[in-house]
Image 1: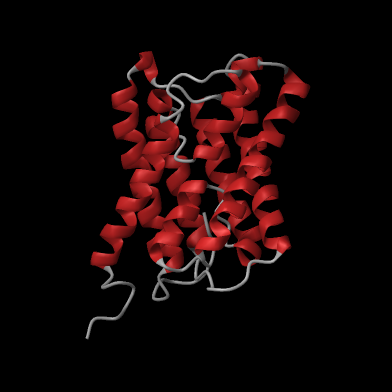
Image 2: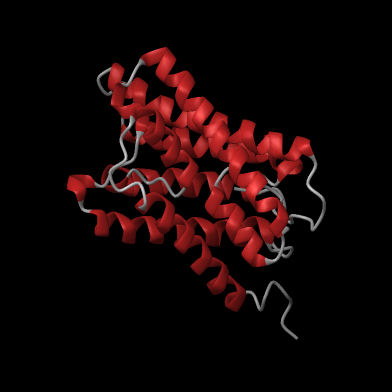
Length: 232
């Protein structure tokens, strides 16, 4: 999701790809783990608590790993940074694969620890309303990506606040729409629980909508920010 998201056009080192895998592992392990523990404890964490967990782990990871990898932890974000012209095309696949592998490893470990509780935190549209979920996930990711671009990528932003802004956005959006769509905004976060639990219904929604929402955000923010440049 990116901390100081002034991602350099550079050769990505193996440690940066590894950081993306580890960061996505931590995000999925803690976030979907909270969903599972909430079910095990009969609502001991609560929906708002789960939302807080997701937002908090995102903020923590941005500050912990953002200076190493840019802290994407999300294929939709990686593709959006590439579209923004700040991330090399040849590294997109490496980052996405690392994110997916990290997420899958987290879901496997959760399955080994708790079994198939709460479908490992898999995201599903409420009452199978896939069109509603598609629209909402697109809008949620659009909002998230605007915050990422404005608080982290734009060089004119206040430094040091990206983690707080992005983490709060994730938490608030999860609290607002999590009961309807799962508030994924992240294909890797949705793919891993689906793969390990075998819950594939409407999985395409959780790929297409976040990617579309993030790409729209890049286009809109380019217009708002004068293509990330000061107005003349």
